[in-house]
Length: 235
Image 1: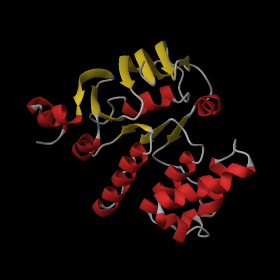
Image 2: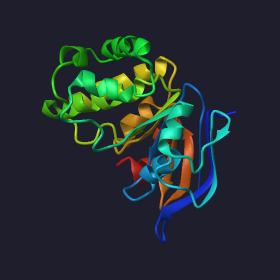
Image 3: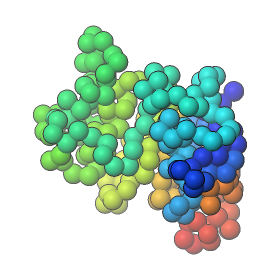
Image 4: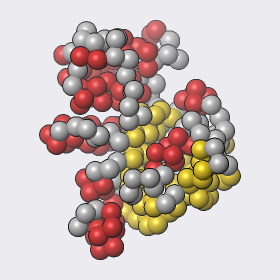
């Protein structure tokens, strides 16, 4: 039984259909990358999974339970967290305060222990724990956003364009952190424009185009597929 099962989900905004019977699976401890051109529906999949958009049809199950149509705060309680591409930190709060905000359902006894685990994963945040998130670099803010989501010790984390707008050196650091998060037992579903690098680290990937499934396979299979390379990887 996959940890996350999205089965023939159609969804959109108002009268505009974006997704047409999209299906994906994420097993426990997997990194799954969703790739495709702009407008393919990748972020819409994430929003439907996390309850930010109600599916028109199809089913979404997580950890054996139906989550289609649940509110995001209810989905968080099932063990799933989401890091959006933008507006993902409280800019006027410090690093430590952002982490504490992420732990809103934990009791006080657990918060300090979780913060220490986040600081071990992101040593830069430990150094900047009293700095306001709005004064940090883009890469550091992304670490704060991921750290806040991880405070709840989820089973799975959704990442929407984690490398967007970051310098190549910082992108490498963020991707290394994602691999480490996965090694610690979390499933990862990520949307990423940096398709080639995301597939290199992913166990499996799905290619979406025009809101529909196009190709799926292991990360290496997609990297080696000439059609995928030509259409979606720039080579």
